[in-house]
Image (cartoon, rainbow, N blue to C red; front, top):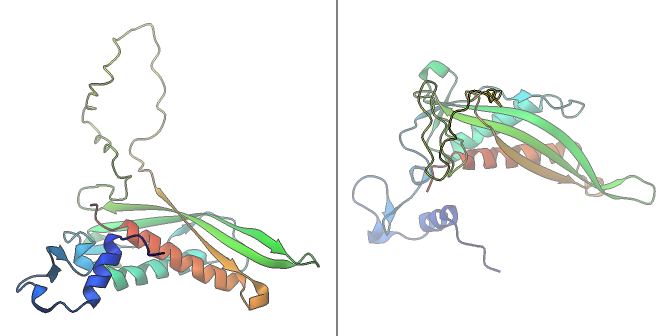
Length: 225
């Protein structure tokens, strides 16, 4: 069956097709009003990204030790390969910063041999990501469609569908549920299969996982429709 059309697939096909007179005379090339290249997918107001080494809070055993270094490098390479952003090592000169935490690494056994050995397995890794604008503190990775949280010191906007409850001094003040200053990270999950009978190992599965995580994280950095 034909794959479902997406904006990324359309832009890739349009870039490979003969453009002829469809290209604009100035600025970025466009087809039928749609821009081509990385500038069509990523915010042009963002020039640089600071990517510190991801934090690994998962239980680490061989061969998964140091995975945070591998995933950080894969993300940096993917940013340089597919986006218009430039990765910088100086946070003072960066427009944004990308923070990541490896929260969980686990392995599923999908099939076993008659000798109770692993025939097919799957490595699954969860990474929590926060992308923040260092210029004004905006959380760029916030869930889409949600209402942004008010800044400290600003009044909370009223919801016309839920009017405020009249003040009652006999009711105790409820405790604060969470710190509003802490952004909610985005959970990214990727898996990699390994079949020992085909020469696949934990290391090859980890290589697949880190590259799939990098693609998903950078895709999250695309500007909103």
